[in-house]
Image (tube, rainbow, N blue to C red; front, side):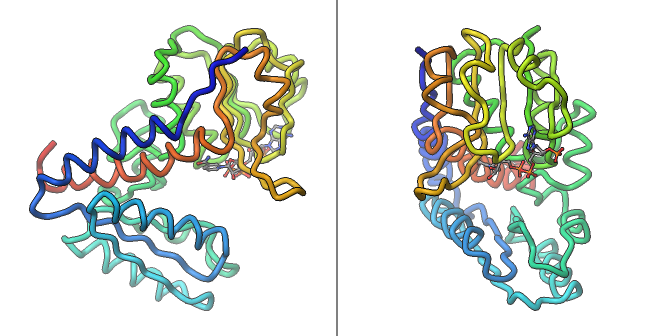
Length: 282
Ligand code: NDP
């Protein structure tokens, strides 16, 4: 039976440490969140980010823009936040409404305020094995979960399922930095079951409900489930069939309560780190 990695608890510890540190600051870190349109899931995510940043004593700035915002208008909002020395972190909530292409905006965020680590500057630094200003929050959170359990990655075979720019690719880069041997799988990968069966560590980020089954994994594998889908009964589920995998894995992250809470804690940690960089404290 696997040990369940309690992401909620690990994430709360990170938040409490940030809160304590921020209490000593006269000027508080400030996080600006831009949301365009009224995607219901995005609204919930943004609300949670603002709530967490207020809990920590950060200044939070919410820019809610209408669905029909033009490219020029959004660029102006980003520019103003870049120029505002009271703003330390800028987050552009994705996805953007139809007609706006995220590629036109992400690189407009100043890299030193890029709390999500999605700019070409910060992701490029990550891929070169250099230190970015900020590392993408979900992959950063996954590494923290593995570290919290003292899981040694050196020489281990890690299979990452999914190759998005926000999860799949950056977690592969981080695992590589930790000297794991990394296989990046995706929807065109052949014989995925055979590949997964060799893996010491599996990070799955596909959004395919419970598609990784117990018979696909090696005994003792570490399973990190990033996927979040709502099944037909309205229950949140991951990429992993928890029941069948639980009996075979050594560690497993639950959904909810695994990777999700780490993502938001790392967002807050990135805000604090960028604040310190901007203030010359690091
Ligand atoms: P994307 O849709 O951008 O990427 C999904 C990836 O999965 C693609 O690379 C795709 O391959 C691959 N894929 C799809 N089907 C299969 C398959 N059958 N076998 C192998 N690979 C497959 O998703 P994201 O990376 O943005 O998110 C993935 C999941 O993680 C979602 O459920 C999302 O909600 C969740 N998520 C959770 C977060 C958290 O904090 N817990 C944060 C971010 C995301 P291809 O490239 O070939 O199409």
